[in-house]
Length: 107
Image (tube, rainbow, N blue to C red; front, side, top):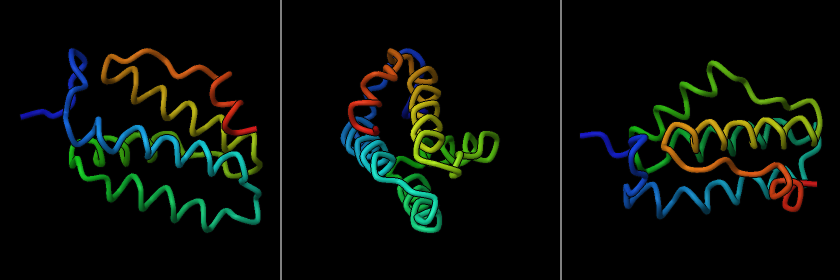
């Protein structure tokens, strides 16, 4: 059984943990500096790899393997988190997360 589909994103695990996970990632991007790369990598690996929805965690790991995050600077990291968020939203049929909203949190 697939928990997340293009038709509905009503998986109770994903809908409970997804929004605060994105909020954490966008908020971290707002304070990110290249000297924090090790911490950022650990945070992303922990949040995505340990996500309680197994299908979501696997999908996230596959996305990140194909689209590595940009750890070179704050804007690059924020943009790559935003792109990741929107790739997930597209996959599950949700509307795009606006860059402007990301700017409010991230920059």
